[in-house]
Amino acid sequence: MRLSRAKVKSFLPHRPKNAHKGTFGRVLIVAGSANMSGAAVLCARAALMSGAGMVALALPSSRQCVATAALPEMITFALPEKNGVLSLTAAAKLKAVAQEYKPNVLLMGPGLGKTACVTAFLKKNKIPCVLDADALNQLAADKKWHTWLKGRFPLILTPHPGEMKRLLLKPISFDSQIRREYAQELAQLSGGVALLKGSNSVISNGEKFYINPTGGPALSKAGTGDVLAGLMAGLWAQIGIAEGFDGKSAFKAAACGAYLHGLCADIAAEKLTDRCVLASDVIAALATAFKQILQEKKK
Image (cartoon, rainbow, N blue to C red; front, side, top):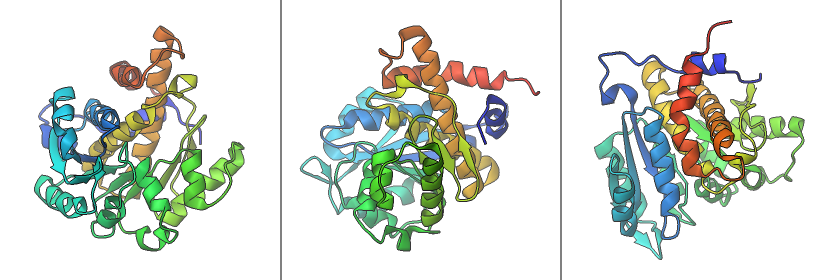
């Protein structure tokens, strides 16, 4: 099914007048490394702008001050690091952070670099999870990842074609039918929702799929994937609070995130041209994108 504004509007939960920050969910993001602090900040900013009630960022201790200065609205947790990336011991500290913060949704991956912390944490925890970027690469390094991950918790995976190749051990393809098959296979293997990024992104829950029509060359820029991951996690926190954290809410969040992300890029490109749009410009267009979605009339 091709996504539309009306469909996305139907997925967005109502925001009651008497709401408080707990009404819209808590997101915990595990991201960043010595050379990739920006990825962590971009996804955290997108999660906050999505409407999530609280967003926390867990990152290497040396990056904590940088992140806090860049985005004072978020909470930060410092994790142990080695050579600029999270150390294996960070998995235990992250577990303690999760017990303290009690996130509704966990996002792992943007800018993390190569760290065994990812799989060490995932194997011992069951928080609804979005896996992106380096988290997917660490997952793919374990050839039996699907044997222990499937059904462990509600899950969204967001690979680009190269990451999909590593996860499925199949060649990259830009054929639309094969892309749908890849997304379906990944969803079935993981027991979650797969979003295969690229032109006309495909979102599958293993049975059904959505095709996203928004976005274009403006998204061909570093950092835009981090924005998508943060946006999706923030939307899932809100939809999940309203409907429950399961495969259905994950599917809706992935669809909403993909459509809004592309719409933001389209809005930014109208003003800046697709050549000049930065990842931060995509975030800046979120307010306009939400207005356009919410003003959509029933047909």
